[in-house]
Image (cartoon, rainbow, N blue to C red; front, side):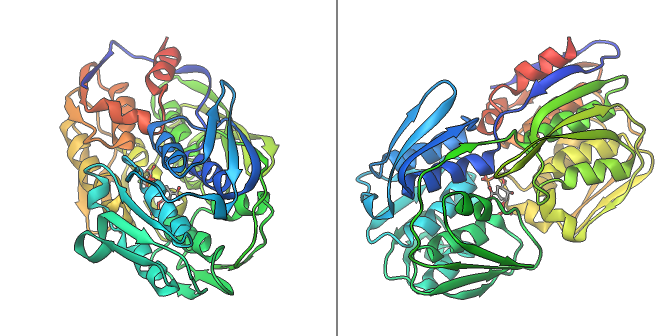
Length: 428
Ligand code: SPQ
């Protein structure tokens, strides 16, 4: 679907919104709720396409999951109650679903086949298949199990000590979830800290897990027990309006109940370093901390972004790149080669699409260089089926007077089904 976004004269964004539930936390709440013993109630679960696919995968393994207006209720079967699925499990566009499911299924003594869409078919699965095979799972698939479609026969796992070559929460989580059903202890050491939602959620379900710097250890054969979870708003979704509030002149926005887990708040640190006026007020501190965030338009300056902060803002790089087009001076984003294996190659798609709107931006091997102070113009642009590229382009259209056309805009419902409604409310 192609959407037309019209910007007439100088617009400003004003108002208060609550963004949908955190996608990473929502996936984990459903997954752990399904394999726990007893009922789990999840309030604020994201009902975007990716999380709905996670729910469908577990329904195909016999887990009863009910959706009410305010919450989702899961009748956990306990891990041993999962049933061998008759059908193939389709993860759609969701990398988190396929990689974390592989970790869970590695412990299940039956056969499962997983597929996804054209984007999933291009994303590397060997990063989880290799350690899971070391633990004893039998995995096959396209290119020797490096890509989906992928099939797994689990069971009989032994704990391993795994030194991960990438800072990836999906790799870490897949191994920890397999470790939960392995003999002995499983450890994962990461090169830098990735998001820690799996560890926090496992604890909430009564599991013991030890974290020592970059090393995480889990003892096998622990039971999980159903619980109640409140999912905070997704900082990766809020990021679009955080940046919009800063770069669209004369704007002032409040975003309520945003998850501020420190492994995810790189976007706030970077925008502040660039000169943004952002104030956080703590809203709650349960399994995951949350805050109300107020943003005002500010003059930004270009900075260098790289190193340990990258895993803390990896999904926000498209919108950071847009913010950098409005900063004074040059912004360099480096150490972010992981962008190449997301829903799209986000180095290429960011550069290609923002260039169409007049941005001065160059790709590099591990990031991009953005020259600030550019006036953007409307254009025919494409999300390439990547929700985060689609939302970044919609925010860019607020700075481009005239009509911007975004092709494949339906991808946005993967993580933010009411994005356009919020954009319209804030513009009026
Ligand atoms: O689920 P998917 O498709 O991989 O989603 C993305 C996104 O932009 O929404 C990545 F493209 O987020 C990942 C994130 O990049 C979600 C995630 C998680 O929930 O564990 C971790 C990150 O990926 P990785 O590969 O660094 O572990």
